[in-house]
Image (cartoon, rainbow, N blue to C red; front, top):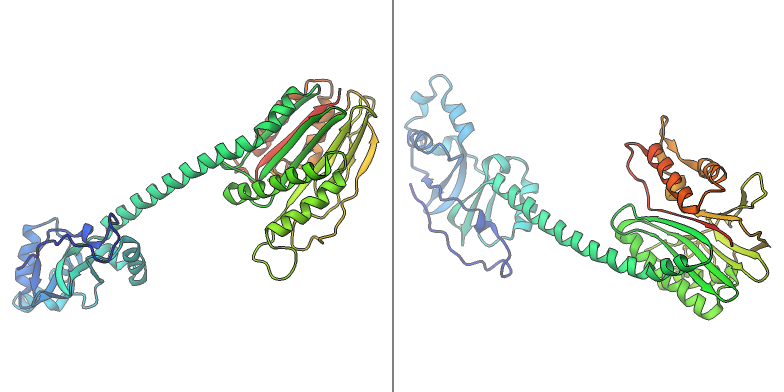
Length: 408
């Protein structure tokens, strides 16, 4: 029986990268001329050994699995027939054989190709074709699990820092909302650490501007879209000002399509956003709204029902949104004390309840009507509690953003 030294060279891997050599055990190999009786003795003496490589002139030719071997040799008369015969009788003639420098990633791919027998039998590690040692499938799975856990840790660290960036991007709008004369409350809850919803608020001498947006995707893809869409909105506001929501939506549409190459021809993406955009003129006491697949709700102090300002049912920036598309604006008088409410579909579409149906806008608007005299913070707390009860054990489907403002 032979056991080769474990070389340290890793020519096939990058410095610091783990390879097949890291999985080598110190188990011996058996020569092809060794008998089954000798293999039986070795298995009995070394109970930790689960497989044995069979070599010929230091080159592997097969692999003996302990459980299979003992099962065969325990059959009636097999000891008498096979004890003195070569151990190649019960070996696997096509084991997985890999070079010592093979990376763990490539080794994992090869293992998947060969199948689950590698998990039980292990694999043979060689250097220049000569036997180096045996690797165990369970060790490979443990290393792969550790590597994946480390990758996940690094990814989560990156995502958590991305959340810091996204929140910093939104900070000025939150600060603007906080210092407004209006009673205003915003709820913004990404489904994951980062999300695809964003908002924008700004106070001006003659009024204030607000926008709520829901970009395609959630998590990291959604967060990337918020950067693109938010930058487009900021640029449009700088060029056009805040008082014409219709013009702003058209400008954002062109900018997003240009950034994503969705202005014509073949594009690999088809992404965009839904947006409610509005301007409250404090001098004329009026509201101007334009929306892309996101309505704005208005509850006047003396109104019995909530008024829905309907959006154009066409998203912004998508491949099928025409470059010259116009999202028409609606302007109407705005009484002091009126409530404005807007939400992304993370609230409306959340599944829950006894029949696993969507939360729906009817429940949200009913809560708005019931809480019309309460501070907006109380209303938002109550609506969040309603949603939590409705959601129950269901998973959160999407990012959640909603806003309630009482106009001064």
